[in-house]
Length: 284
Image 1 (spheres, rainbow, N blue to C red):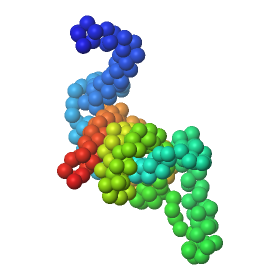
Image 2: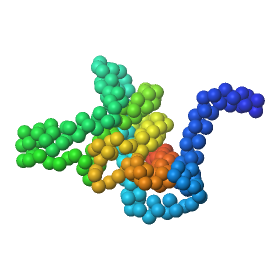
Image 3: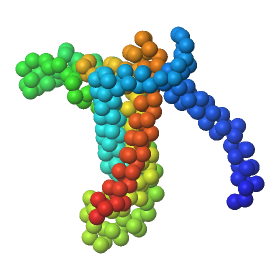
């Protein structure tokens, strides 16, 4: 491709892609600058690292970082782990497969806040789940399940909400694998797990990486699920950013930049880890 053709392609992309890149770039620049004391909304702008030092010294900040990473990583892994067997099951059409696929993708149409409130109503102290456990004799009295310390409720909501998206990506990749390849592996004695580990997973690696990255970015910056169903003794980075904004926009910018860095670094690490596990030394 000549330089003139490259220039033509860039010019054609500029009206759409150029606008998006410039707008995102300005937002990122202002957030980074504010985290260092610039663009002060209430006084003079002075370059300083004091806001970073202040946040790094706070246990609330470090706990929010580790908690958000925990939610993001496990949400991505669980969503993909549940989506893979479903994608393999729906690989070939059968009677009722279209209806089953539509039902599995239904969570995509449900707003996160609605899902979180429904979940809270089900698992509340006098909710349906507690009543069911007592009715069948497994529990003698209601148990507190809402806002659990281990954030199991948040992980459940994230997995339930994001699994259909992972299923969409993985189904197309799995369906693109030729039957001849799988039949040849079966004829050579490869079992179900061996076919998945040696053939299906490596050939659908790109879709898996895309699902892991997109789900991780959304989960690590989640606010609604955490506020409604998350533990009361922990804050996510999104919660912390809203909290510190009341006293300092610069400290809120520090949290925002931290979210950007975690999203970028975590996405790269998840994509690299998936490739190493499936195509590196760990795959042998």
